Image (cartoon, rainbow, N blue to C red; front, side, top):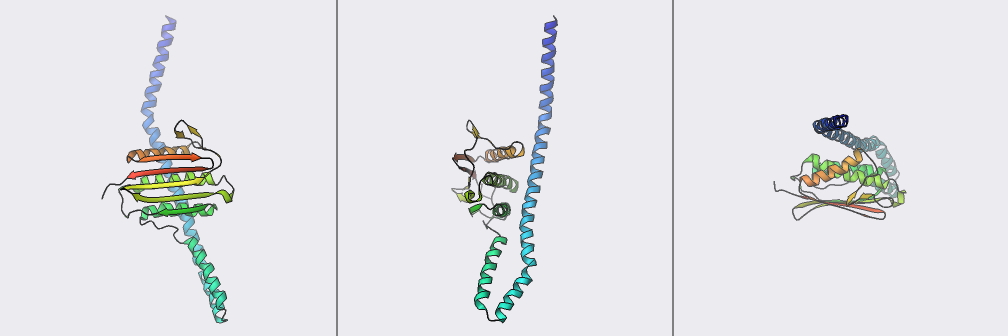
Length: 242
């Protein structure tokens, strides 16, 4: 009898705990999503601020550059003035928008990430052509591209500078938005079955799940490949005509 009462009590506790978990799960997921999106917004703000600080710094030095060029020209040192202009052109290229895709929202997220990539001394090759208006929301694009670029950066910075590289290619292929991000990495990627695992826990792993969710939401295609020292992600999202 005592044994039966003990089993009954245990089962009741299990059922109660299960019901509490089911009731609390939506709130927990909502909290995690809210926290993740807030951190994404804060990180994006920091990235854009980095670009603006570069621009403000160049503008601050503008008068000094003009004075230097004026001095060269007044002394008829035309070769020196030309050399100085060439150096300014190279410096301005680092401040100017790195990439123009044709789509403002893609430009915003890509260029903020590319600015950070350059700061981390990562060799980058980026090509992107995107229609001005597409059917994928700004939030989904920002989360998708942002996490792909963040993951690539985090993998690269573990390597010596001379081994760091990221290749980005975005285009429309057969009415689908094709996104490819390839990066160098240290060793082999961890995986469990068909799923690759993050080196980090918490929000980084949650970001990988968000990529999966967005691709699934749009009925797209996702492929991750890893070789020794290289990791590549391909995404294809169907585009609906607007």
